[in-house]
Image (cartoon, rainbow, N blue to C red; front, top):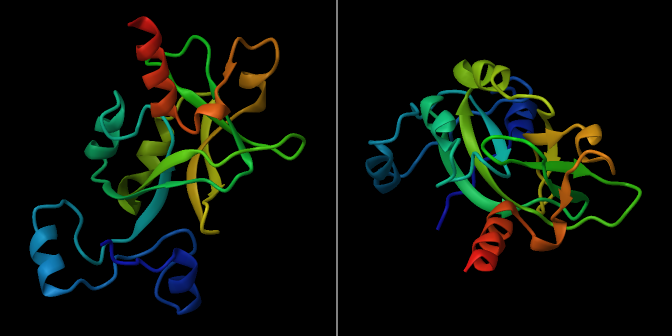
Length: 181
C-alpha cells in the first residue's frame, strides 16, 4: 500500500516547503530499503506532476521523466471537469486535456510523478505548444501541476478528436489497436 505523502500546501503551511514544492516524507526502514535504488534523495524538493498521455509509463516520452529523475507516485484520475482530445498532427501522438465549464466533463486517467525541483524547469521548457503545464484538480480534491492544452488545439476546425468517453489515453490507444485487428 502506498504511503500518503503530504501535499505541498500542507508542508508550506507548516513552514517546511516553498509554495508549489514538497519534500519527501520520512520513510519506514522497509520503505527506505526498497527506495534505495531510486534516484531521488529522501529530502529533495519535488513538484507533483500529473501526466495524461505520451509521458505515461510505457509510452514514447516517458524517458523524459526518467531523465529528469522523476519518481512514479500513483495512477489516479482527474476530477470530472475535464475533456480529452487526440490532437491532430503530433509526433508521437499526444492527447490534449482541457478543463471545461460549458459542457460536462469526466474523470480522466492520469499518473502522478514527483519531479525534482532542480530539473522541473528544464522539463517544462521542453513541452511543445499547444501543450503546457498548469494546475489540475485530481479526483480526491488535490491540486497538482499537470499537462494542459490550449483550447485552440481542440477547436472544431483543429482536426482534434474528442476521446473523453474512453476515460484516458491508454484506453483510447487500446481501442485503436482493437479496431486494427
